Length: 343
Image (cartoon, rainbow, N blue to C red; front, side, top):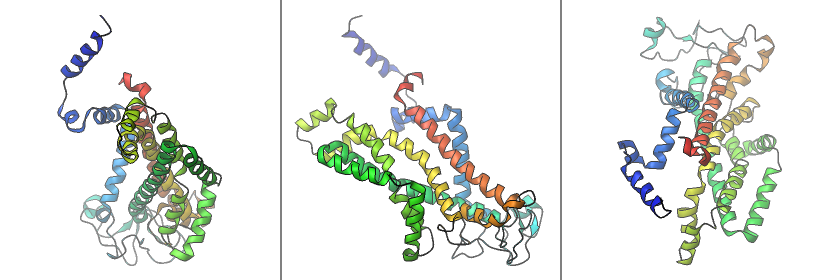
């Protein structure tokens, strides 16, 4: 077979290959990615865990009906005692409304502390359920903002090069020189008196120091693409730089950045929880896993008896981070060009 005949046969084989409805709907590349995720055991486990958290976040008002409709993220408390109560203890004061499924599942007519209470009688079950929304909101918001900043800086730096690249990369180096957690803690502590206690200050602090990895990764990918034939041809015919960058280069260079972003969501969620644990994150009583862990600080030397104050929020946080890391790992394997031929 001659070299001229080979592409023709390849084209015929590609045309004759059966295409199912899903591939026809989403396109070949997206279908290959979805198929890789669906057939990868690691991604299946991660997607199951992630689906569970998404379900809990969506069904939070049903799983744990809020005491106050105006402030559902305020964890209800059963008094003000310092000693935690074991799982299964009945509520004594200000019981939350019973959900429709309560009696069928528990066989009780009265609300009980399913996961016990923390010091100060904060209900752990309520904090775990509604804290899922907090973790998703914080992780997704910080990651999305960091990706947008990093993509913009990395794309402009790589495409224009020269002095623009040098200035932007030196700024990136400056931000990377600071220890991430320490500077985020410091900035959050500085912003809290001005913005008030809540989610805004720690989220801004984390966003400010979250974009550098995305910028550097995207810059390296664009540097390998900007001299490709289709980019040079677009320049020759007079296509605007912005169109070349965002229409032709960025879609082909963004996938490694998206993989990194998927793995960073869990990392930023646990960092945000860490700030709440240290007292510079969510306000006291706000449904956040780090906040729940902070209530347990006085009892960590007695975990043999009060194990539940650490286990329930701690395991939830670990599984949340694990789910995003598993999905990110599988997504990286699917999008790795070196593995495409094996799928």
